[in-house]
Image (tube, rainbow, N blue to C red; front, side, top):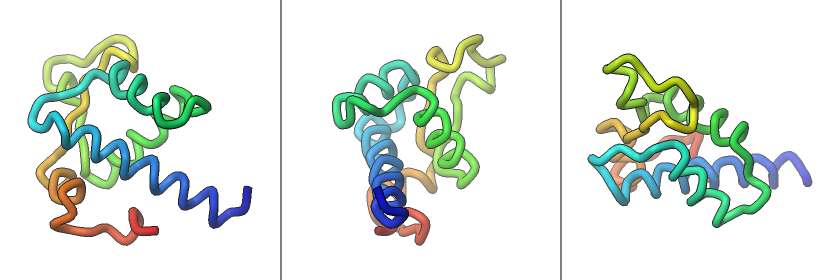
Length: 102
């Protein structure tokens, strides 16, 4: 797979994560549930990729872990994630981010 194709796939996956979180906004989604949704789209997607994608989107300010405010979950798959206001705007496509454009 070429660099451009790989980059496009990463962008598409991150956009899909935001879109799926947007469907239940403002309710938080458990990472385990989000992972199940993501492997429905790509059976080769694994938990380590989800961790990287969520870390990237969190660093951009598009999502947050709800349970961090109450001490956090012990395991990554037990954490609950939700969109921030900025993440909601990106997911709704009322704002854009060049890093998420193909």
